[in-house]
Image (cartoon, rainbow over all chains, first blue to last red; front, side):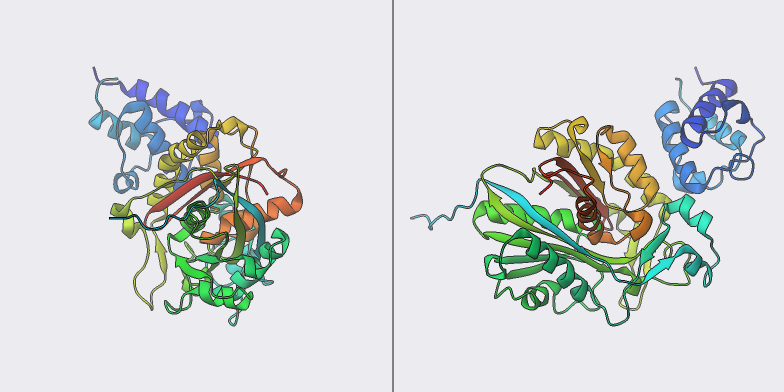
Length: 84
Length: 321
C-alpha cells in the first residue's frame, strides 16, 4: 500500500527537524523550503538523502532543483513511492 | 630460476613529526565580498570559512612545500641525509614539468632521493602517506618526507563566487620512518571515475569547476563507511579515536561525516574556518596545527580521510607523533 500524503508529510517533518532544526508543525504543504523554512541548497541535498532512506525514493539532484515546496516533495515521493 | 635478492624493511611505519606553512596574506570574507556578489554570513553558513591564506604571485607550490617540509624535518630530529624518498601530493603546480618533489628535496639539502608527485587531488596526502608507509616496510626507503602543498588560488576563477570563496593556499608535511609497531594503519582507498566531471579544470587555461550539490551528496553519503572501514582495518573502534581529521572541504561536509562516524571522543578538525580548503595540504596542515596547539596527545590514534576530484578517496588511522 502506498504511503498517504499525511504519512509522507509527517516523515518529512521529522527529517526537516533533524537536519535544519525546524519545528515539524512548521512543515506544511504550502511552505517553500528556501523562502519560508530558510533551508539552503546543501540542506536540501541532506533532506533528499534522508528521504531516500525513509521512503525508499531516490531524489536525484536534477529533480531536486524543481522541488520548491513541501507539497512538491510530498507529491514526488507519492508518485514514485512504493509501499512502506 | 633463482630468486633475486629480497630486501626487507621495517615491520611497521610511523610518523615522526609534522610541519606546516601558510602564506602570510590573510583574505577575509569581507575582502572577497568587495569583488564578487557574496557576503560573510552567506559564506560562513554554506562552507564555514571565516578567512583563508592566499600566496603571493612569486610564492610557488614548491616554495610552500619547502617551508612545511623543512619544519617537519627539523622537528623529526633527522638530518637531510637520512631521507631517501620525497613524495609531494599536489594538483595545483604552475606547470606539469618538472615535478615538485625533486626541487623540494634539492632545496632542503636532501641529496638524490627518490622523488615523485602524487595527484589524487584532495585525497593526495593520504595516498602519499600510504605510499611512504609501504616504502619503509618494503625496504624501498628508510625515511620518507611526505608533503601536501597547494596553490589553488592560481586555478580559481576569482569572479566565480561558488568556488573563489572556498579554495586557498598552504602546505603541510610529515616525516615517515620505520618502526617495530604499526603506527600508520592500513589504508582504505578507492575511486569513482564515473564522477570525473563533478570537479575538473578543463585545460591549461581553465579554472577549477565543481558541481557543489553533487559533490556534497557524494561526500555526505559515501565517506562515513570508508572512514569506519579504516578504523576496522586498524583494529580500533571510532569511539577510541582521539582525533578525526577529514579533508577540510567544507565545514558542513566535515560535520556530516563526523556525525555519521560517531567518534564521540575525538577532536574533529575544523581548520577550514581559518585556512579555507587547501586540497592535499589540508589534512597535514590541520593536524600539524592541532599538535602545535596541544589539542591531541602524543601516541593517540587519529583518523585521516582525504577525498576529492577523480573522484578519489583514502583513509587511514595514524598515531600522533
